[in-house]
Length: 176
Image (tube, rainbow, N blue to C red):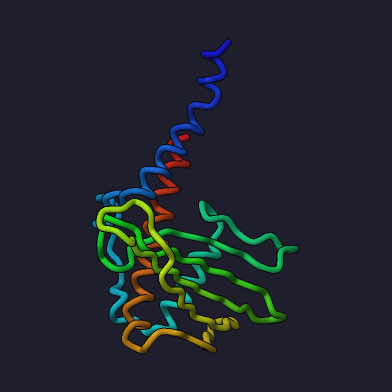
């Protein structure tokens, strides 16, 4: 009886293990992801990248999609934005809220820091946000707490991390 119970929950245990491993250490980028030709984000305009972040979050699939009766969508990710693969110090929340014929997208990044060297416990040090409105193909940034230089370097990293996270989740769900 115990064996059947264990086997019934095995896929959930495996998925939990994968998600936990991803939380502690960034999974190596798969060969498929590296080999896939991508248009360089550095050559893209910040508004194009914001639109792509919006599209990636809204795309049906592993991250979900909004039901027509829902007013907003919220997605959260722990990401490596600072380039340090040893930790994931940044927590990114993307909130999309329907406002008539346009949508308000808020990207909030919380930066975590250890109080002691090599400590697994991290504390929120700073939170910054970007607020923009999307109407069709038009993107308007209403507010940002980043300098122009930070803004331009942050957005491609968020987009890259969202795509990578989606690729990992799709491969997990495909194996089921």
